[in-house]
Length: 284
Ligand code: NDP
Image (cartoon, rainbow, N blue to C red; front, side):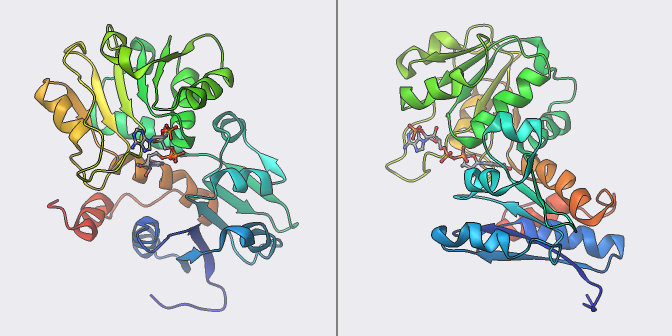
């Protein structure tokens, strides 16, 4: 790819960032679209994040994707915030205006719904309760997205009850907290089970929840995409449920960001899922 003086630049910021797959996605789309653009990764010290964002005011950078641990700080750094970023309490997209302003958005919920649409076509978020494992930033975005699509009830199961209660308090009475000990009963009648916990996958990781009480019609989704087939998805598949992996969420959250940065939707051509799977060392 030839870079010129007119190259439009965007990137992703986080710490650590070397593992990020966003450059693979965005640069594949840029190349396929024949755009004079480039997408790079930035590692920033936590206490320098606000100064880093301020340095791009004025439009020398089209925009940034934001990942851990900066999603809440990104929201605070912005002059304008979309309703969905506000509802999620976090931003994963910052767009720099030519007038020096910074706008924040959160496309994680859109990415989540994109993943369901791709891998569980016909699933409707308004068809029944969502059982959500985890109560961090990604979980909050999931709640906002499902409620906006008419989900009648969200049951939050989280290790730390206070964090789940904080999340529930940010929404209305449709969102309630369930103790992990009552998780099996909470699966009753669920339409969707989403794992938004970042619990590690090593030998000290907690076992996946018991999904045997889930209705056979429920769809199970895990936001983790490394590995693609997580213990949660294996447990769901063993129960006979339709499963949705986290990789299409990653692609689905990147699509609106690409459009915000480069002024057009991603081109239909490149098999970005296959490209990312190769990067991850997984069979396409
Ligand atoms: P946060 O750090 O904000 O939240 C982490 C959540 O995981 C909390 O609910 C935490 O519980 C729970 N957790 C962590 N360790 C354990 C453990 N050992 N046992 C039980 N629960 C645990 O992370 P995010 O919400 O930002 O991200 C969550 C996951 O989703 C990550 O794996 C992230 O990579 C993934 N993600 C994927 C995306 C995609 O595009 N596919 C997009 C965004 C996120 P507690 O409150 O008790 O600490």
